[in-house]
Length: 363
Image 1 (cartoon, rainbow, N blue to C red):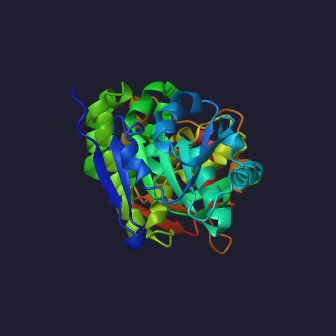
Image 2 (image 1 turned 90 degrees about the vertical axis):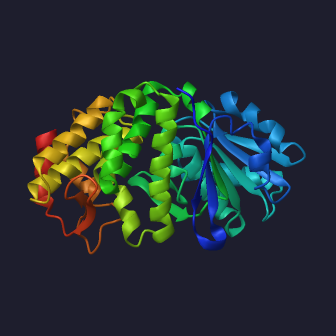
Image 3 (image 1 turned 30 degrees about the vertical axis):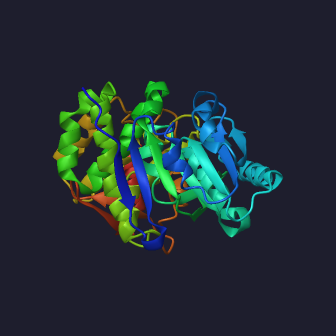
């Protein structure tokens, strides 16, 4: 199957609007992204797995700049304040001025930490997202959410800081381990589950093609998910309303990730299980039908995603972690639930007993 030409999707935020480029060979398209750099300094933030593979592809585009690289160890456990401090030290050693740019070359951990570091340096400098995982391409690289984890919970420190551009080169997915690739599909499914039933049906029809990474199917899935998210971000940049719907499955999922010390489940895996738990809770609260939950579970299983809470996790501990979620209000759980595929909504004052019952039943 031939791969379609690169697509451009605009995140429309007035003077801060930016392009999301999706296609093959984009890292080596230096003229495209070099034009987005305004100053003489650049810091490439990457990790020890990605940098050997893809840093050489962008080095020629950095010719003539004062630039350096800062590499993290791979994994969610390294998205910490300590590493933000090291990234800021790297900017200081570079002599980065206010027109400098941070380039995030890697997955969601790299993008979140690089963006947060850029938001902090001199109260905010440019950064460019070059996501190399499917999860980052369809979710974390778009929308300007940046942050780091704390021992008590995920992403509890952060800032909204929009990138100058996002460059999603699908060639990088060839080196992505199968588990990481499947984790990215969870975020694709989430976008369809909360607001696009026709896209959900498309995913059901193309699940086999996506599972084997058919390039045309992958590019189409990325573009449709990014187009949906770009619209939401344009309407609600700082998550005062509609954008919160993008957290479908995340309150459950973040609790699962935290309980597993960020080593048991990948983020996308936590989201997959979390979406199913949210669907089951919606069913228990008489908001949705069992058929919708079953349809979601079938699609998750079709692309190889987990659908059960890992063994040994304590439902009471998970509930306690869910109480720390940023969406909660007035000391009460505020969750993203649904009334079926494509119809998610924000629900406040959720009964903790019902949540606990769902967690216990899934354990």
